[in-house]
Length: 358
Length: 268
Image 1 (cartoon, rainbow over the protein chains, first blue to last red):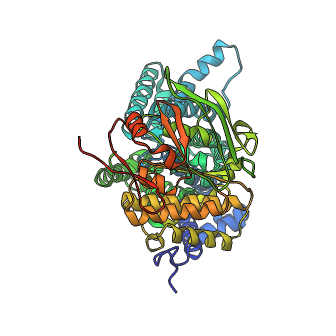
Image 2: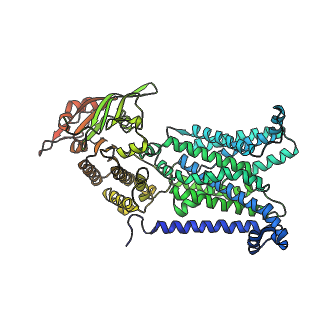
Image 3: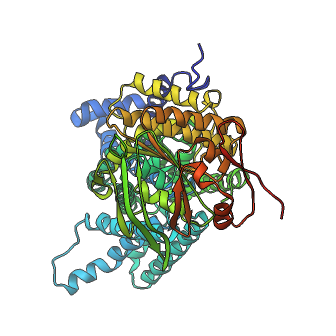
C-alpha cells in the first residue's frame, strides 16, 4: 500500500538513509585509499593495507611505510577533517541565514580567519620580541587566531545582513564581498612587512593547500574540528524549525538565540581550524550541502552529518587532483575547488532567480 | 463569571517602538474553548497584540501569564506546549516536503513520543488540513492557500504533541483564512471549532467580519492600539461602530434565522 505521508519516492526513509550513509562512508574509505596511494611513488591498495597492519616491522615495506605514515596519511586525515569542517560550516551558515548561498569563504568568514592567521605569521615573531617572550610561537596560536578572526567576521556579517530576523541575500553577499576585500587589503599590507619565507606562507594561505600537512597539524586540528562534527547533529532540530523563520522557531519551543550563538561559534571554530591548517579554501561549504539537498533533501539532522562525510571526500579528491594535474609540482587546492565550485555557484544563483526572488 | 480559570491573562499590555505606541492598555482573558476574534483596520496593532500575547514580543508595560505563570519565567519548550501560533505567510529557503514541514511541529516538543504516535498525529493533521494528497510535494511548489493549510497542519501537530505534556492550550491565528477558498475557509474554522471542543482557547485575527460573526463568541475591536469595544458579534457589529472604526458606510444586516449580523459592501 502506498504510504500517503511520505509519498512514493521516499517509500522507506529509514532504509534510504542507511543506504545513503553507507554509500558516503564507503566513498570516504575509497577516496582515502586513493589519496594515500597516488603520487610520485604509487602504492597499491593491498600494499597500503599491508603497511597499516604491519607498519615498519617488515623491512621490505620500509620505504612505502615512510611515505604513507609521514606524508600521505597525515595529509589525507587533514583533508578529511578540513573538508568535513568546511562543508558542515556551509550547511550551518545556510541554515542560520536561511539561505542556500551562504558559504564561509564566499561571505568573508574564511578571509577574516585568514587575515588573523596572516597577522600571526608576519607579526607573531615581532610581537614575541616586543614583549620579551621566548620564541618560537607554539603552533596552536595560529588556529586560535584564525578562530578569533572567523568569529569576528561571522558575527559582523550576521549583524550587518540580518534585520528583524530576516536575512537579505543581497546584503549578505555584498557585505561578504566587503569583508573579503577588507581582509584581502589588510593581508596585502602585511605582504609589505614580510620576508621571503613569510611571503611564501602568505601565498599558501590565500590559495589553500594541504601540502604542508604534518602530524603536528593533524594533532592541532583534530581537537577543534572533531568536537564540532560531534556537536553539529544536535543543532538539526533547531535548524529545521529555523527554516520557517525565527519567530516560528520560537513558537515551536526552540531557544533561538542560543541556537544562533551555538551555530556561529561552531562555524568559527571549524573554519578557523580549517584555515589555520590548510589556508582559505572556497566553495566546499556551498557545493556539498547543495548536492546533498538534491540527493537526500534539506532535513538538517541528515544533511549535517552527510555534509561532513561528503565534504571530507570532496576535499581529499580535490587534493588528489591538485597533486596530479601539474605533477611533479602541485596546484593550490583552492584553485581546484574554485574551478569546480564557481560554476555551481553561478548555476545555483540562476536557478534561484528563476524560482524565488532573491 | 466563568466556571474555569482563564488559560491566559493579559493585563495592561502596552508596546512602543521607535517612539510610536503600537498597543496600549489592552487587558484580556482567554477562557478554555473560547474563540475571540480581533478586528480592526490596518495598522491598528492587531498583529503586534498577537505577538505580545504569544510571548514573541516583550511588552513595554503590562504582563501576560499562562495559567498564572508570567511568560518571562516560562522556558521556550514549555511555552510551545501551552500555545501554538499560525503566522500569516511563511516562505521557506529550502525545498522541504509538505510532510517534513508539518512534522517540524512535532520536533520542538514531540521528542518524548514514540515513532508510531508521531506518525499517527502527522497523518491526522494532514487529513484535517486536507493536504494528505500533497504530502510528498515540495512546499515551495504549492499555492499560497495550500501553503497556509500546510502551516495549519504543522500547528495541529504542535498542539497534539503539546497535549501530551500540558493541559489548557491557547491557539493564535493571524488571518488564517486570508488566502483560502470558501471550502477551505470553512474547513479550517470547523477544525478550529473541533479544537475548542477539546478546551483549546483561540484568539484569531480576521478581516472577514462575516466569518468573524459566524464563528466568534467575542469580538475585540482594536483601533490605534486600544481596545475600543468588545462583546458578542450581535452587540459589536452595528452601523455606527463599523463607520467609526473602519471609516466606511457599509450596512449591517441580520440573517433571517438566528438574527446573526452580516455586513455588505456598498459603493461610495
